[in-house]
Image (cartoon, rainbow, N blue to C red; front, side):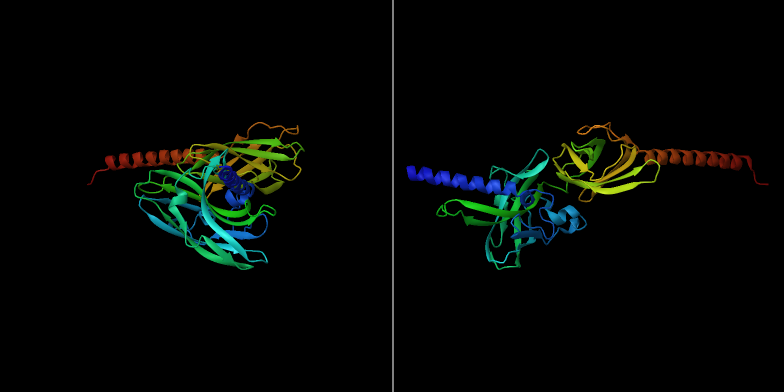
Length: 346
Protein backbone atom coordinates (compact mmCIF):
# COMPACT_ATOMS: atom_id res chain seq x y z
CA UNK A 1 0.00 0.00 0.00
CA UNK A 2 2.82 2.35 0.88
CA UNK A 3 4.59 1.55 -2.40
CA UNK A 4 1.41 2.27 -4.35
CA UNK A 5 0.97 5.61 -2.55
CA UNK A 6 4.56 6.50 -3.35
CA UNK A 7 4.03 5.76 -7.04
CA UNK A 8 0.89 7.88 -7.05
CA UNK A 9 2.72 10.77 -5.43
CA UNK A 10 5.58 10.50 -7.92
CA UNK A 11 3.13 10.36 -10.85
CA UNK A 12 1.33 13.40 -9.53
CA UNK A 13 4.62 15.24 -9.08
CA UNK A 14 5.66 14.33 -12.60
CA UNK A 15 2.37 15.69 -13.98
CA UNK A 16 2.72 18.84 -11.90
CA UNK A 17 6.26 19.42 -13.15
CA UNK A 18 5.08 18.85 -16.71
CA UNK A 19 2.27 21.40 -16.37
CA UNK A 20 4.56 23.86 -14.60
CA UNK A 21 7.20 23.50 -17.29
CA UNK A 22 4.69 24.14 -20.05
CA UNK A 23 3.26 27.16 -18.28
CA UNK A 24 6.75 28.42 -17.53
CA UNK A 25 7.74 28.25 -21.18
CA UNK A 26 4.99 30.63 -22.20
CA UNK A 27 6.18 30.67 -25.77
CA UNK A 28 5.71 26.92 -25.95
CA UNK A 29 2.10 26.84 -24.90
CA UNK A 30 0.61 30.21 -25.45
CA UNK A 31 3.06 33.03 -25.93
CA UNK A 32 2.69 35.23 -28.96
CA UNK A 33 5.76 33.71 -30.61
CA UNK A 34 4.80 30.12 -29.93
CA UNK A 35 5.43 28.79 -33.41
CA UNK A 36 7.00 31.58 -35.38
CA UNK A 37 9.70 30.39 -37.78
CA UNK A 38 12.92 29.90 -35.88
CA UNK A 39 11.23 29.87 -32.48
CA UNK A 40 13.16 27.87 -29.91
CA UNK A 41 12.57 26.64 -26.40
CA UNK A 42 13.99 28.53 -23.44
CA UNK A 43 16.97 26.16 -23.34
CA UNK A 44 17.71 26.85 -27.02
CA UNK A 45 17.37 23.15 -27.77
CA UNK A 46 14.04 22.48 -29.43
CA UNK A 47 11.98 24.26 -32.09
CA UNK A 48 8.62 23.62 -33.75
CA UNK A 49 6.73 25.19 -36.66
CA UNK A 50 3.82 24.48 -38.96
CA UNK A 51 4.52 23.56 -42.57
CA UNK A 52 0.95 23.45 -43.85
CA UNK A 53 -2.08 25.74 -43.80
CA UNK A 54 -5.60 24.92 -44.91
CA UNK A 55 -6.32 26.16 -48.44
CA UNK A 56 -8.92 28.70 -47.33
CA UNK A 57 -6.51 30.28 -44.81
CA UNK A 58 -3.36 30.69 -46.87
CA UNK A 59 -3.56 34.47 -46.53
CA UNK A 60 -4.15 34.27 -42.75
CA UNK A 61 -0.97 35.11 -40.78
CA UNK A 62 -2.45 33.59 -37.63
CA UNK A 63 -3.11 30.25 -39.35
CA UNK A 64 0.55 30.15 -40.40
CA UNK A 65 1.52 30.13 -36.72
CA UNK A 66 -1.26 28.07 -35.15
CA UNK A 67 -3.64 25.30 -36.15
CA UNK A 68 -6.77 27.41 -36.67
CA UNK A 69 -9.50 25.44 -38.38
CA UNK A 70 -13.22 24.82 -38.62
CA UNK A 71 -14.40 21.30 -39.44
CA UNK A 72 -17.73 19.54 -39.73
CA UNK A 73 -18.40 16.51 -37.51
CA UNK A 74 -17.11 13.32 -39.12
CA UNK A 75 -14.22 15.14 -40.87
CA UNK A 76 -10.55 14.10 -40.89
CA UNK A 77 -7.79 16.56 -41.75
CA UNK A 78 -3.98 16.49 -41.56
CA UNK A 79 -1.38 19.15 -40.83
CA UNK A 80 2.33 18.83 -41.50
CA UNK A 81 4.81 20.33 -39.05
CA UNK A 82 8.51 20.16 -38.26
CA UNK A 83 10.44 19.68 -35.02
CA UNK A 84 14.07 20.82 -34.94
CA UNK A 85 16.95 19.97 -32.64
CA UNK A 86 19.09 23.09 -32.35
CA UNK A 87 21.64 21.60 -29.98
CA UNK A 88 24.92 19.76 -30.50
CA UNK A 89 23.57 16.55 -28.95
CA UNK A 90 21.11 13.94 -30.16
CA UNK A 91 17.73 14.43 -28.48
CA UNK A 92 14.88 12.04 -27.71
CA UNK A 93 11.66 13.92 -28.33
CA UNK A 94 8.11 13.11 -27.29
CA UNK A 95 5.08 14.39 -29.23
CA UNK A 96 1.65 14.70 -27.69
CA UNK A 97 -1.45 16.91 -27.57
CA UNK A 98 -2.48 18.62 -24.34
CA UNK A 99 -5.64 20.57 -23.59
CA UNK A 100 -5.58 24.34 -23.16
CA UNK A 101 -7.89 27.14 -22.09
CA UNK A 102 -8.19 30.90 -22.26
CA UNK A 103 -7.86 32.32 -18.77
CA UNK A 104 -7.62 36.05 -17.96
CA UNK A 105 -7.30 36.74 -21.71
CA UNK A 106 -4.25 34.48 -21.92
CA UNK A 107 -3.88 31.15 -23.74
CA UNK A 108 -2.56 28.67 -21.15
CA UNK A 109 -2.35 24.87 -20.72
CA UNK A 110 -5.26 23.37 -18.86
CA UNK A 111 -4.55 21.57 -15.60
CA UNK A 112 -7.27 19.08 -16.57
CA UNK A 113 -6.00 16.67 -19.26
CA UNK A 114 -9.63 15.80 -20.06
CA UNK A 115 -10.83 19.40 -20.45
CA UNK A 116 -11.77 18.62 -24.06
CA UNK A 117 -11.49 15.86 -26.64
CA UNK A 118 -8.46 17.07 -28.61
CA UNK A 119 -5.97 14.58 -27.09
CA UNK A 120 -8.17 11.72 -28.33
CA UNK A 121 -8.93 13.29 -31.72
CA UNK A 122 -5.37 14.20 -32.71
CA UNK A 123 -2.60 11.70 -33.38
CA UNK A 124 0.98 12.16 -34.60
CA UNK A 125 2.54 9.70 -37.02
CA UNK A 126 5.70 9.45 -34.89
CA UNK A 127 4.98 10.30 -31.25
CA UNK A 128 8.49 9.22 -30.19
CA UNK A 129 11.53 10.14 -32.23
CA UNK A 130 15.26 10.71 -32.06
CA UNK A 131 16.59 13.86 -33.73
CA UNK A 132 20.30 14.21 -34.56
CA UNK A 133 22.14 17.45 -33.72
CA UNK A 134 21.27 20.54 -35.77
CA UNK A 135 18.57 18.84 -37.82
CA UNK A 136 14.84 18.63 -38.10
CA UNK A 137 12.16 16.02 -38.66
CA UNK A 138 8.94 16.58 -40.59
CA UNK A 139 5.82 15.01 -39.10
CA UNK A 140 2.07 14.82 -39.69
CA UNK A 141 -0.72 15.40 -37.21
CA UNK A 142 -4.07 13.79 -38.06
CA UNK A 143 -7.23 15.34 -36.65
CA UNK A 144 -10.20 12.94 -36.80
CA UNK A 145 -13.43 14.46 -35.50
CA UNK A 146 -16.20 11.94 -34.69
CA UNK A 147 -19.52 12.31 -36.47
CA UNK A 148 -21.27 12.77 -33.12
CA UNK A 149 -18.94 15.55 -31.95
CA UNK A 150 -20.90 18.45 -30.42
CA UNK A 151 -20.61 21.99 -31.70
CA UNK A 152 -17.98 24.27 -30.17
CA UNK A 153 -14.39 25.50 -30.25
CA UNK A 154 -11.65 23.48 -28.52
CA UNK A 155 -8.21 24.71 -27.47
CA UNK A 156 -5.05 22.67 -27.17
CA UNK A 157 -1.31 22.52 -27.77
CA UNK A 158 0.68 20.21 -30.00
CA UNK A 159 3.71 19.74 -27.77
CA UNK A 160 7.23 18.54 -28.57
CA UNK A 161 9.20 17.89 -25.39
CA UNK A 162 12.48 16.53 -24.09
CA UNK A 163 12.18 14.62 -20.82
CA UNK A 164 15.18 13.68 -18.69
CA UNK A 165 15.51 12.17 -15.20
CA UNK A 166 16.42 14.56 -12.43
CA UNK A 167 19.86 13.66 -10.99
CA UNK A 168 19.66 11.67 -7.78
CA UNK A 169 16.06 10.57 -8.21
CA UNK A 170 16.69 7.28 -10.01
CA UNK A 171 14.54 8.48 -12.87
CA UNK A 172 11.37 8.81 -10.81
CA UNK A 173 10.79 12.49 -11.56
CA UNK A 174 11.24 14.16 -14.92
CA UNK A 175 11.98 17.76 -15.80
CA UNK A 176 10.31 18.58 -19.11
CA UNK A 177 11.32 21.25 -21.60
CA UNK A 178 8.86 21.72 -24.41
CA UNK A 179 7.69 23.86 -27.28
CA UNK A 180 4.30 23.79 -28.90
CA UNK A 181 1.84 24.97 -31.50
CA UNK A 182 -1.51 26.29 -30.36
CA UNK A 183 -4.68 24.60 -31.60
CA UNK A 184 -7.97 26.44 -32.15
CA UNK A 185 -10.36 23.82 -33.54
CA UNK A 186 -13.99 24.75 -34.10
CA UNK A 187 -16.50 21.97 -34.78
CA UNK A 188 -19.98 22.37 -36.19
CA UNK A 189 -22.12 22.04 -39.30
CA UNK A 190 -21.82 24.57 -42.07
CA UNK A 191 -19.06 27.11 -42.57
CA UNK A 192 -16.65 28.84 -40.25
CA UNK A 193 -18.45 31.02 -37.68
CA UNK A 194 -17.83 34.76 -38.13
CA UNK A 195 -14.84 36.40 -36.43
CA UNK A 196 -14.59 40.08 -35.60
CA UNK A 197 -13.60 42.55 -32.90
CA UNK A 198 -13.90 46.24 -32.12
CA UNK A 199 -11.64 48.77 -30.39
CA UNK A 200 -13.85 50.43 -27.80
CA UNK A 201 -11.51 53.11 -26.51
CA UNK A 202 -7.90 54.25 -26.24
CA UNK A 203 -6.52 55.51 -22.93
CA UNK A 204 -3.10 57.22 -22.50
CA UNK A 205 -1.07 56.90 -19.33
CA UNK A 206 2.41 56.90 -17.86
CA UNK A 207 4.30 54.04 -16.25
CA UNK A 208 5.78 54.26 -12.75
CA UNK A 209 9.05 55.47 -14.29
CA UNK A 210 7.29 58.09 -16.40
CA UNK A 211 7.29 56.45 -19.85
CA UNK A 212 4.20 56.98 -22.02
CA UNK A 213 1.82 54.05 -22.28
CA UNK A 214 -1.38 53.49 -24.23
CA UNK A 215 -4.15 51.01 -23.37
CA UNK A 216 -6.75 49.81 -25.83
CA UNK A 217 -9.97 48.18 -24.66
CA UNK A 218 -10.97 45.53 -27.18
CA UNK A 219 -14.16 43.46 -27.47
CA UNK A 220 -14.46 40.17 -29.37
CA UNK A 221 -17.73 40.55 -31.29
CA UNK A 222 -17.42 37.29 -33.23
CA UNK A 223 -17.87 33.60 -32.50
CA UNK A 224 -14.22 32.43 -32.53
CA UNK A 225 -11.36 33.11 -30.13
CA UNK A 226 -8.93 35.80 -31.32
CA UNK A 227 -5.29 36.75 -30.69
CA UNK A 228 -4.96 40.53 -30.72
CA UNK A 229 -1.71 42.20 -31.78
CA UNK A 230 -0.84 45.48 -33.47
CA UNK A 231 1.02 48.79 -33.75
CA UNK A 232 0.60 52.42 -32.70
CA UNK A 233 1.67 55.61 -34.50
CA UNK A 234 1.77 59.10 -33.00
CA UNK A 235 2.12 62.56 -34.56
CA UNK A 236 1.92 65.97 -32.93
CA UNK A 237 -1.02 68.16 -33.80
CA UNK A 238 1.27 70.59 -35.67
CA UNK A 239 2.46 67.86 -38.01
CA UNK A 240 6.15 68.34 -37.21
CA UNK A 241 6.88 65.19 -35.17
CA UNK A 242 6.08 61.60 -36.09
CA UNK A 243 6.76 58.69 -33.75
CA UNK A 244 6.33 54.97 -34.22
CA UNK A 245 5.37 52.40 -35.05
CA UNK A 246 5.33 51.11 -31.48
CA UNK A 247 4.57 47.42 -31.08
CA UNK A 248 1.92 46.07 -28.74
CA UNK A 249 3.82 44.72 -25.72
CA UNK A 250 0.91 43.11 -23.88
CA UNK A 251 -1.24 41.12 -26.28
CA UNK A 252 -4.59 39.52 -25.54
CA UNK A 253 -6.38 36.30 -26.45
CA UNK A 254 -10.13 36.89 -26.29
CA UNK A 255 -12.95 34.41 -25.99
CA UNK A 256 -16.10 35.10 -28.04
CA UNK A 257 -17.85 38.00 -26.35
CA UNK A 258 -14.82 38.65 -24.17
CA UNK A 259 -13.30 42.04 -23.40
CA UNK A 260 -9.60 42.57 -22.84
CA UNK A 261 -6.82 45.09 -22.99
CA UNK A 262 -3.72 45.42 -25.13
CA UNK A 263 -0.89 47.65 -23.97
CA UNK A 264 1.60 49.69 -25.99
CA UNK A 265 4.61 50.86 -23.99
CA UNK A 266 6.49 53.70 -25.65
CA UNK A 267 10.23 53.61 -25.01
CA UNK A 268 10.70 57.27 -25.88
CA UNK A 269 10.32 60.39 -23.77
CA UNK A 270 7.36 62.26 -25.18
CA UNK A 271 5.62 65.44 -24.09
CA UNK A 272 2.06 65.26 -22.87
CA UNK A 273 0.74 66.37 -26.24
CA UNK A 274 -1.89 66.50 -27.56
CA UNK A 275 -1.01 63.78 -30.08
CA UNK A 276 -2.82 62.35 -33.05
CA UNK A 277 -2.89 58.59 -32.51
CA UNK A 278 -3.46 55.77 -34.97
CA UNK A 279 -3.76 52.27 -33.53
CA UNK A 280 -4.09 49.29 -35.86
CA UNK A 281 -4.90 45.94 -34.28
CA UNK A 282 -5.05 42.60 -36.07
CA UNK A 283 -6.07 39.02 -35.50
CA UNK A 284 -5.22 36.96 -38.53
CA UNK A 285 -6.94 38.53 -41.53
CA UNK A 286 -9.05 40.88 -39.40
CA UNK A 287 -7.73 44.43 -39.11
CA UNK A 288 -9.33 47.29 -37.19
CA UNK A 289 -8.01 50.85 -36.83
CA UNK A 290 -8.74 53.51 -34.23
CA UNK A 291 -7.70 57.11 -34.81
CA UNK A 292 -8.09 59.91 -32.33
CA UNK A 293 -6.39 62.60 -30.26
CA UNK A 294 -4.91 61.88 -26.85
CA UNK A 295 -2.95 63.68 -24.15
CA UNK A 296 -0.63 61.89 -21.74
CA UNK A 297 -1.07 62.70 -18.03
CA UNK A 298 1.47 64.65 -15.97
CA UNK A 299 1.78 62.13 -13.14
CA UNK A 300 3.73 58.90 -13.21
CA UNK A 301 1.74 55.71 -12.70
CA UNK A 302 -1.49 57.42 -13.78
CA UNK A 303 -4.01 57.16 -16.61
CA UNK A 304 -5.34 60.14 -18.53
CA UNK A 305 -8.63 60.81 -20.27
CA UNK A 306 -9.70 58.49 -23.12
CA UNK A 307 -8.73 59.62 -26.60
CA UNK A 308 -11.28 61.60 -28.55
CA UNK A 309 -12.46 59.55 -31.50
CA UNK A 310 -11.85 60.65 -35.06
CA UNK A 311 -11.97 57.26 -36.80
CA UNK A 312 -15.65 57.68 -37.65
CA UNK A 313 -15.16 61.11 -39.28
CA UNK A 314 -14.29 59.81 -42.80
CA UNK A 315 -17.36 57.59 -42.66
CA UNK A 316 -19.58 60.50 -41.65
CA UNK A 317 -18.09 62.68 -44.38
CA UNK A 318 -18.66 59.88 -46.88
CA UNK A 319 -22.29 59.55 -45.82
CA UNK A 320 -22.78 63.31 -46.03
CA UNK A 321 -21.17 63.37 -49.48
CA UNK A 322 -23.36 60.52 -50.66
CA UNK A 323 -26.47 62.30 -49.40
CA UNK A 324 -25.38 65.51 -51.19
CA UNK A 325 -24.71 63.72 -54.46
CA UNK A 326 -28.05 61.93 -54.22
CA UNK A 327 -29.80 65.26 -53.64
CA UNK A 328 -28.18 66.84 -56.69
CA UNK A 329 -29.07 63.82 -58.81
CA UNK A 330 -32.73 64.03 -57.75
CA UNK A 331 -32.88 67.73 -58.60
CA UNK A 332 -31.43 67.11 -62.07
CA UNK A 333 -33.79 64.18 -62.61
CA UNK A 334 -36.82 66.26 -61.69
CA UNK A 335 -35.73 69.03 -64.04
CA UNK A 336 -35.33 66.52 -66.88
CA UNK A 337 -38.80 65.11 -66.22
CA UNK A 338 -40.37 68.58 -66.26
CA UNK A 339 -38.59 69.39 -69.55
CA UNK A 340 -39.82 66.17 -71.18
CA UNK A 341 -43.36 66.76 -69.97
CA UNK A 342 -43.39 70.34 -71.39
CA UNK A 343 -42.19 69.38 -74.91
CA UNK A 344 -44.61 68.14 -77.54
CA UNK A 345 -43.82 66.84 -81.08
CA UNK A 346 -44.94 69.07 -84.00
